[in-house]
Image (cartoon, rainbow, N blue to C red; front, side, top):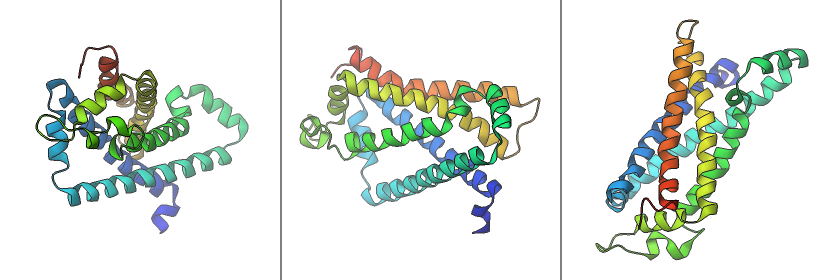
Length: 222
């Protein structure tokens, strides 16, 4: 497709797929926050009440993620190959940590996503505490217990916190790139976009980080 062969076209696709995943992480952290109110099992039950819809959504998000990952790596390699060393050095001095490490934070998130799906979705990494093998008092898969017992493990909690730090840096530059790709930034709006994007990225990541930290420290108990 000519659209995907052009740099502009691929950047537009990166922006669109990135936006879809941003919306997902926002909705997901809101859903996860039901753990504070004891509603996590009910939330999980309603979420999986329509299996065909769940699988359609999973396939859609897998497609978005795959496109974002493939074209992100491709554009990063093309940019690195096209820039003279002197220009790359000059630009590097102006670039932020988040922008210089987008490819690495993206790969960290990709690796973490595989583990996360094996851990909480397929439930094969810790089968003894999986929700499928443990039911709550209402006969539902005990997702709450699975999450609490998982995050009492310092290795699992540290892994999740580290991945969410990577997510924060990825979102900081990703949101800036979204506005730049769509031509919505200029000298007057850029500082607002930077501050707003950074604040949003930190809030989203802290929303995820709070859960393992509060469980590990015993603030949220099973």
